[in-house]
Image (cartoon, rainbow, N blue to C red; front, side):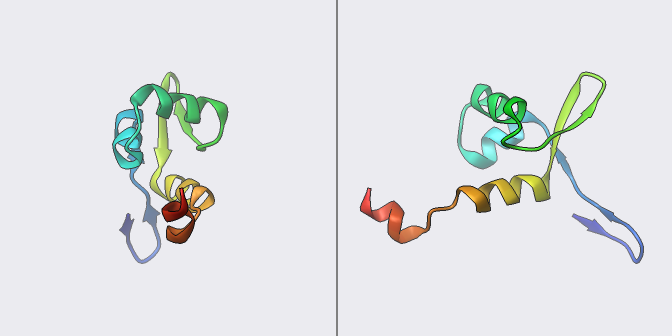
Length: 71
């Protein structure tokens, strides 16, 4: 994220970058983006995800370390 005195600019991620962050396939990243689970920004046929929106998706899905260890 780039911050100026008056402007905050968030980086926009493509599906491959979303997949890399989440350690999932690019196809699954596209499905999550298409279904609206991960909010997107669209420019004509180009689809991107704002970093804060991906962070929020990760927070919503987080079950915690103790729950992960029980599985």
